[in-house]
Length: 53
Image 1 (cartoon, rainbow, N blue to C red):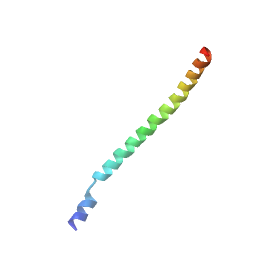
Image 2: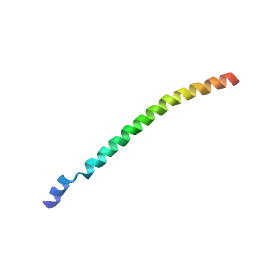
Image 3: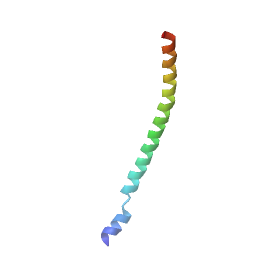
Image 4: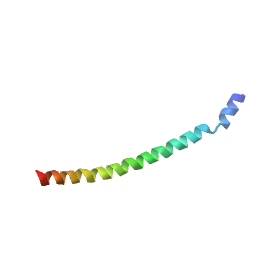
């Protein structure tokens, strides 16, 4: 019974989940920024290739 009470009172798992959600959010922001930047970079390189081609 003591083991079950200790398991219920333990908050370490909740903290790990919170940090995981924060990391996932930051990762999504990075991916969104790279996606936008990537499209602009492809457009720039395409312009350069047509200019030199």
